[in-house]
Length: 189
Image (cartoon, rainbow, N blue to C red; front, side, top):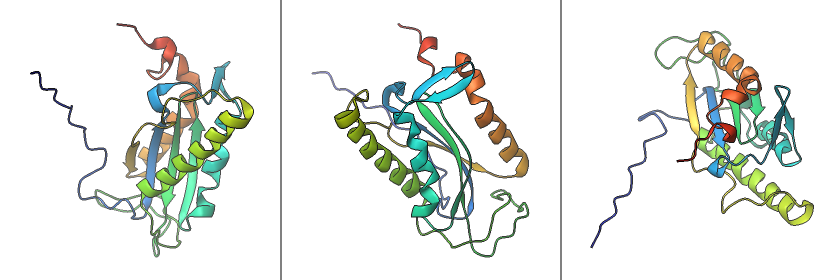
C-alpha cells in the first residue's frame, strides 16, 4: 500500500506577531487557480469587467471596521494588491522606531478585528457578490472557491518600504506581460 504524504504548508504569518495591532500591511489576494475573472490588461491599463468591480467592496472596508483605512490598491485580472492601515489609539503620524515600526499611523479606534478577519470579510462579501453575478448576469463560473486559501501579507516597516510598495502596486498593470500570474506566461509541462 502506498502512503501519500501531504505537503507541509508554509506559515503565512509572522510568528508571535499580533495582526490586530496598528500598522500598515501590504496584502495580495489571488483568485483560485489564478483564473483571470476580474478583467483584462489593455494597453498597460487594467480594464475591470463587472466582476472586477469588487473594488467597491474593498473601498467599503473602512465602513465595516472602525479604525482601518486604505492606502493604495490595484485589482488585476486574477489578483488584488492593497495596503490596509490598522489604526491604533495614541499613535502619531510620524514614522515609528524599532523592528516593527509602522509609518504614518493615524489616530483612531483600536481595531478589534485582525488583518485576517478583515481580508476574510472582503473575500466573503466578494464571493457572495460573484455568486449572484454568476446566477443572474452570466459571469464566468468559478471552481468551488473564488479566492485561494489564505493571502500574502507584508508588515510595512518604514516610509521607504511603503513608497516601494506603492510604486509596485501602481506599476503592476505595466508589468503584466512579465507577471508570473499572467496565464500567457505559464509553461505547460
